[in-house]
Length: 78
Image 1 (tube, one colour):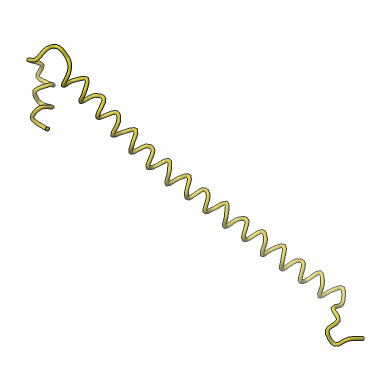
Image 2: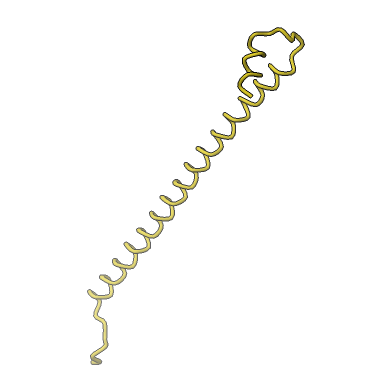
């Protein structure tokens, strides 16, 4: 028998280690994807908030009544 021979019990130990390593790698990939998705959702939410403020500002600034108190306060802000 060769010195480098692998018996059945060590072979199963190696496959167990490999499967755990693969599982850990897959779990880390899923965690990374979830972190990226969460970051993108936060950025998208910020963009939507800015767009909402822009819409309100534009609707107020370009509305017909020039003596609108809300319109005057928005002019004061910008």
